[in-house]
Picture 1: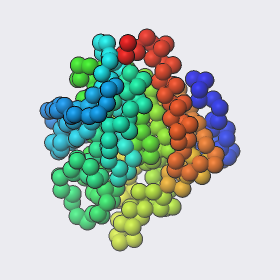
Picture 2: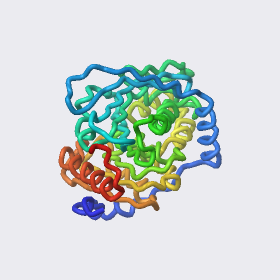
Picture 3: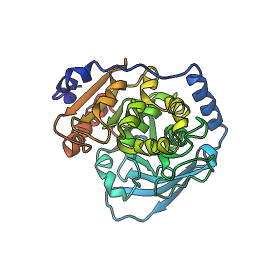
Length: 330
């Protein structure tokens, strides 16, 4: 789409544009995820909705919960424009690492486009959603360092499942047009949006992922960037576990999901991002065969394109909804 053509991947160094490290997926990669999703299906959604008094003339707010892997209760906001007709489009907002869902007004820009918004606290990251199922020892204190020695025990298995289930929740809500569910997120949130798009069977218009994490994981661990320094610290304590740890990580490294991502991807990176370096995301992006567009902000760090890029994403959704005649606010 035209709005994403101003600064594309060509703004990155040539070696970034050709960066294609080998995938690390094992023979049981697909079966592991199928078994995991089958396990998830056996857990009832148990959606609850509770109206929340909120000072807005434009949107209404509900506290919403559902159950996910290990029957954990996932807690979030469900934000709806007050003036709407029929079923309306929905945006699912995935959050960055160790952040909370905050206040509903933080998502008002999506509601003003006529979108419903779903945003949930990531389990075990300081919000209202716990991470109560125990991990096997040894483990680290922070989320990304938990359950490192067994793929079935690893933390990201839980949050990837939560992210897929959020799409399932959106499809059950009577106000939402299930054919117009958008995924959006930055950093960890960008990774979760991409993982969810790879693992869901539901058709999506497109995914928006900014400064995405969880790509090219072995290199991330080697260079101690972002949350992956937690895994590096684990390996300092348990150096003999490196082979096991890296094998577990291969099941959650987004570069190994490239063939499973068939929905259009609109992504962005900061050229000088030290937290989620753009080179690592290129390990996935260069493998994608779906429609894709990468916006590059050569001089930016982990802020990526900031408010300027947000405006472009809002325009992208607006254009799509006009083309599909799916505006819900009349």
